[in-house]
Length: 328
Image (cartoon, one colour):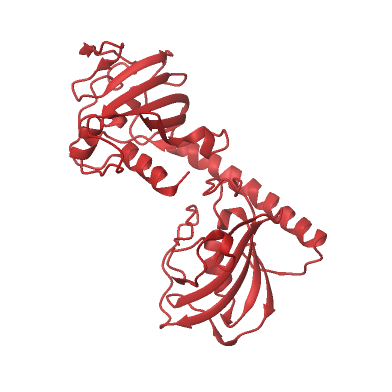
C-alpha cells in the first residue's frame, strides 16, 4: 500500500481542526455505562448523531467506556467506496493497533464514536468527506465531497497509558535479548566478525575512509542497501530495481533516519564502507513500514559514506521509544 494512503487515513482518524464537539453518547463520569442517544436514523439503519457522525453496531458488548488518553486496542479499517485506505490487519500482519483516545476535533470526527465504545464492540462509522474537507483536510484526487468515509472498528481491549507503557517496556526488554541472539546467530552462520556498541548495535568497517568521523548536525551523503536477516533486500539506492538510484543525504542525529543509522553512520568517515547490524528497537520496532520488513525485524545495511559537509552541532534530543523511518 502506498504511503500517502496510510498518512491520509491517520490524518482523518486523528482529526485536523479545532472545532471540539461534546461527546453526546457517553456519560462515564456519571454512570460509567454507555447510554444511547438516538437522534435520527438513516434508511439503512445507521444512527445519526447531532454532529453528523453515523454509526451502526454489529456487536454491542456491555461494559464501561473509558477516558481521554486511554489506549484503544482495535482492528481498524477505513475506506471510501470500494477503495480501502487503511486496514490494520493487513498492515500489521494480523496484529491489533493502539490508538490514544482524543477529543473529537470537528463535526463528524470518528473520535466522537470511538469514545462510545467498550471492549468487544464491533461498529461501523460513517462521516461525510465534506465534513473532513471543512476541517481543513485535503481529499485524494479521485474522492468527492459527497462521498463518505467508512470506518470498520472492532474493539479488542481498552488500556490505560500506564498499562501500555508497562507492557511496552516488558516487550522491549525481551526483544533486546531476542535481537542480540538473532544477530549472533546470523554472524556465526555467515562467518562475520563485528564490533558491538554499548547500545547493542553491531558494525563492520570494510573500508576505511579519510578525515574525521561524521558528527551530529553534519550533512552526510550515503549509498546503501538494506536487507533482513534472511538476506531479502527491501531497499537500495544503488540497485535500479528500487527506482531511486541517487545518493541519499540527511542531517546526522536529527531524527531524519532510524536510530541505528544515526549511531552507525557516526562511526564512519568520508569514503568509508561498512555493514550495520541494527537491532529492531533502533530500526522500525513493531511498526513495519513495508510488507518486506517484518515487525521487530533486525536489519542489515551495507553503507558507503560518500560525503560529509557542514559544521558539527550539538546532538538533537531523541526519544528512543519512537521509530523513525528513512525519508527518501
